[in-house]
Length: 258
Image (cartoon, rainbow, N blue to C red; front, side, top):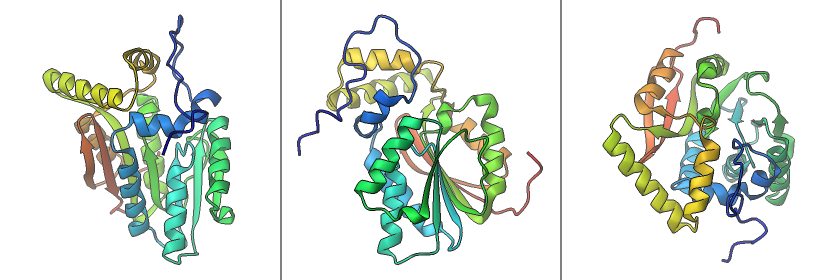
């Protein structure tokens, strides 16, 4: 099927004289689905895996949170999964700081005929909105955009808001501990983007825009962060060169104040 030219990512296709820091504005939100599918390795497959895990660990009567919910792709898939499994006692909350993303999310939920009586999309700061009675919290490529000095505070809030045996699902771009492997991983990543139709100009300009905006951790640092915030059961359920996904399960009922 041919791509809708109106939705195709051309944000960095033309030469930009003064490249500004990347932001999830209206221009990005409008083409975000195409951008994600062409820029994130195995994006659709990871979404399917996240959906399966969310449905597996969901506890009836609880809340599923999607932090950095963007255009509500994940929420739409889980909503369909709930319908397929005849599950009715649930609610989902998507939180995103971008008004443009929240608008696109509402449009998508309407287009897939999701049960919006059970879904709330909130525009706001992840640190301002409560996380309560959660059995599943999802952060798909969101944590990497959070100020590193604030990441522990956020993960502790998530941990405290989870039920016992609740899960946190995180996918992120990662740093490598070895410079040689880092170079090779990045080269393969850029080859993937080229194979998906991005030019070297687009790759270069987006990389510059993301500098100091997307700040990756190494796998060791990411796991240490989860463990320091109370998660003891931490496993990786997907990895591809410099991208990884984690499932963190809450096994303790209490953790210190955050």
